[in-house]
Length: 85
Image 1 (cartoon, rainbow, N blue to C red):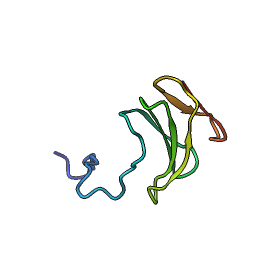
Image 2 (tube, helix red, strand yellow):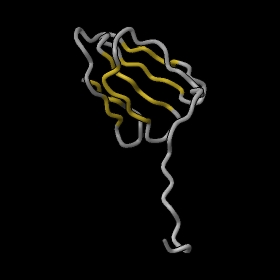
Image 3 (spheres, rainbow, N blue to C red):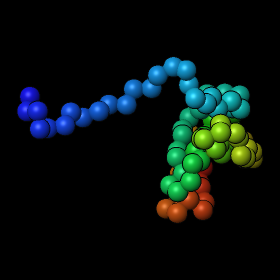
Image 4 (cartoon, rainbow, N blue to C red):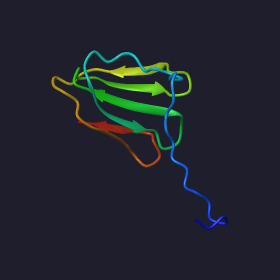
């Protein structure tokens, strides 16, 4: 291997986890990072959408109202809105 070429680094998570997001009562179906802020949205078989601060692990909001499994979520381009289905 040529010494001048950088070897590609692969990120491998290690224990212990820095944060654990607890709040859903059923398996999570999708996770999407916010395009601007340190937030993540999760949707679950428990028919909820949750917004999390990924630096602190704090749940910011729990959105209820679906009557069935929530399967996916997307943020709009600037992160002002999300759509779950």
